[in-house]
Amino acid sequence: MGQKTNSTITHLSLKNSDWDLKYIEKNKEESSLFVYKNIKIIDYLNKIFSQYGFIMHTCKIKSTNTSAIFILFLVEKRLETVKFYSNNLKDLKLNKQTIGTKHLLINNNNLINFITNHVLSIGLNLFLKTQSITIKVHNLNKNFESKLVSSKPKTIEYQKLLKIFRPFLKNNFNKELLKLLFIAVSERNSAKLIAETINLYFVNQKKRHGFGLFFFKKVLSTLIVSNFSKIKGTKIVIAGRINGAPRANKKILKIGTVPLQSFNLPINYYESTAFTSNGTFGIKVWVCDAKKH
Image (cartoon, rainbow, N blue to C red; front, side, top):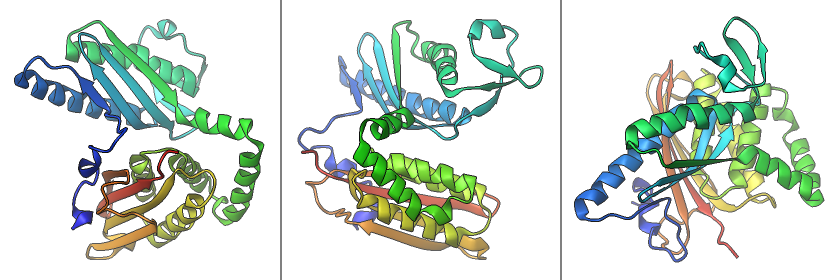
């Protein structure tokens, strides 16, 4: 029965657990209002980041008289081609290379600054009806690259792992997926990143689903036992018309240890839906994080 529940709920009372949503309510009615607003804010942030080619890893919201939002995000692609329909492009202060009249190629730093200063701040001010909103963002790609630069043993191990995955590196799309999985394994609470990476594969690959399952199992089983890993194991359930089968089927990938019945281990859960020409694919991911020492 454990696999049918959201395991995150049963682990909220763990010692040293940090709540992502914090607020100070004056009464019970205001508490429900804070919960509703936080859910709407997270949905809004997910949509905005996905439109610009980013994956939001974690969103922490602290609501009092002012609102503070801290976002961990992941870059899906190195450079994003974005269309801006704005007559006042000079005010954006972006380093841009003009491709067409209003078709710009923008690097990730300038793009994230544009999102936080010109999109999120305006939208959240209209929703919360307050001017005191602080938004901080942190790039997990830069964090992973800085770890490789600062640690020579990790750089050597990273190169060794790339040699193991050499058969998968012939395709640029597989390289992007591999980088996403590297970052997902090296971060805690990464069930969403793994689910979104699998979602990305099924959306872009109409066939070869069997190869995708082999790819994810091979990569994750190798990365989890490496020094990069901060997780003990993961369980992945994928349901849909795999390989274009006439009827839906279910595949289960279990890598490492994922004790869903235990209350003493941090279990992170996320579910996603991939919309493809072969129908929808339901993706559920459970991740057991290693204990902090």
